[in-house]
Image 1 (cartoon, rainbow, N blue to C red):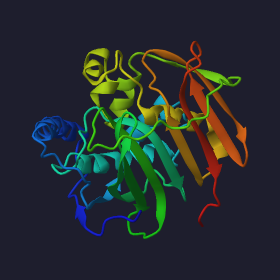
Image 2: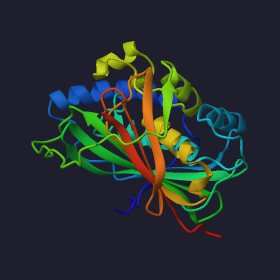
Image 3: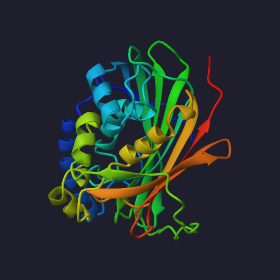
Image 4: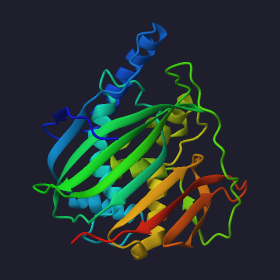
Length: 302
């Protein structure tokens, strides 16, 4: 799908804390409008953009440390998502956005990195929403973000994040159950031991303070008995485990099958697969999958 022709340029990248407060208020208004049968049922036909965004070197270093990455000037692909996320969030707290921001669950992500971005780069971000659709558990939507070096028309990074609003039905249509291939836990190549504060630590470097990630108390109103790990944290951990073999240009995809309740020990397999690497993470006790995905090399742009 193509981006909307209409564009709103933000004067600056908005603070995520302020956006989440707006999201709480907007969610309450949306719930009331839905009870009256007056809630929006379509996506806003507009893209949001922010220009000349600088990389905070301290934040980058904190992100690299949290993910177990070597300190380097090249931006991790997951960190570029962090830069773009507030612009997408600003779009999701618009009054005409049909899903509540607070409680949205990240269920999939696909990133295409055409060329690396660096610590000293300034970047432009453009984001929009597309493909609002029924899901077996509610309603799903894709948020697309494109990142370019400031002053360049060449696309460096593109991410498509799929979010689920559990229990929210915008119409009579209900998606059928997916025909999924049963997951059989493979031989692990490692394990992640995630502390109870993992969500809070990732929130500190990413700014993503969705309450489902912060504590059991704040997660329970949204149907989780404990805080859950951020989807982009676990996906980025898998990419970090692939390491330098990913190269500078690649596609990186992840399907988030079930939440990681914190604290947790997660079994992990990262191994060569086809022309790239495949990965999976699962509960070692139950064998239930948390995520699966792949990293495929691309020919880098020069």
